[in-house]
Image (cartoon, rainbow, N blue to C red; front, side, top):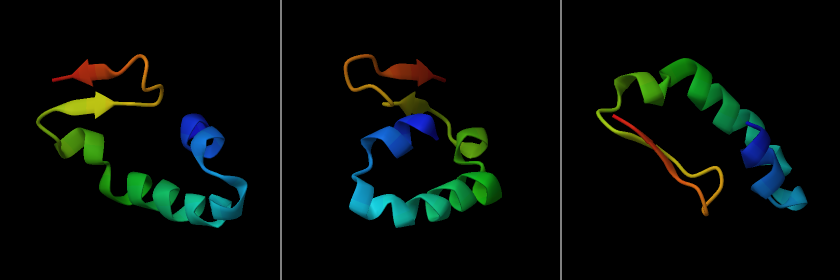
Length: 48
């Protein structure tokens, strides 16, 4: 959530609650076969 807030331009911060709700309600990381986090494009992380 912190990275998303930092990387989202201020005028688009109104979209953040929708992303947080999606994450909470669907838990995409729990159902994915492979999870790649790109919070920092210089250091992508893989979990699978």
